[in-house]
Length: 444
Ligand code: FUL
Image: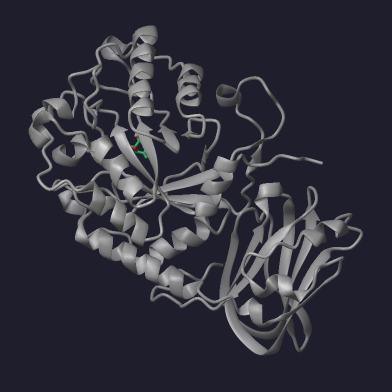
């Protein structure tokens, strides 16, 4: 049996569900997605920058981690790095005495948020880029500044982009050296994307796959020579706007509420964390329309998932089982289910309601602190003609959300048909989530 489990940091991160990305920097002022590195630092000048506003909005919208682009591909540093002149130190903002990373981490700590930093290895400004050894030392120095001077950093986000250096020279990143400095200075930090702890889901649309294992084969370029399966959960990154950075022409192109809810269902609802980018504008503030949309999003989720209909049901299971009281809270642990996992018969948990209930969504959770095992399941409802499928699926993991056309039934059952090891179902949620105007909430 595979016994692969998350670290406490991976577990806390997966349970948090929502992270916010803040793409902010030189590109915000030049209206670009990728700067060239030739920009003048004097162009960076946000007159009303307020990191507390970013943190307040993130907190109120239910995000638990926030990640700031401390350095993007153009190489401009949002902190006064001593290793380059291409930073806030040479900008007019705050008289050249400002430090956006400092304001960001202080605001996050005030609002109880975990902080993450995006630090791009690709650096189109730094002259040593392309001279591999020298640039790798430069990058380790910058990481050292960021991981020493700003308190606890929960996530370090490494993008893999690797453009040509000056004169077409090719930069070879020393990833192992980058990981070592993170581990040495911030042993609890998760290293994401080009990193061993959090995996990129593979697209920038915010959608995970139907089958999403946190237990994976290691990637030799990241994890070295080991071949044993590892815990490497997925993160879905997507922007609330078409671009990652703020652009004036995109103020009316913010993703609709149905689109965001659809992303939530297909990221958080497919065993992944959603990393939603909300870019601050040239004032240095999260723009009003984006903030408004985030409030709508939070309001929708609170309303849709506020009351678990399954709590009204009487519960029986085809195995040793602790009794229906375990379902009175949304996060009950059915550890006793593991006793039945030899799969001579499918494992079945049945819910009987006092009278017919209407619902369109079922939320399943495994106790991932102990691993991820379910590989095939079926949710069924009782009709006059017998049991019929409400949904079928493969992996569950931290959370699987099946949103389907609305049904009415007195009985529902969850049948676990295949697993890689002892299954622990953490909770079963049954909800009637509101339809959204364009119908995209209804999957399939
Ligand atoms: C990409 C970058 O090239 C984009 O500019 C953005 O930062 C995205 C999150 O990662 O690879």
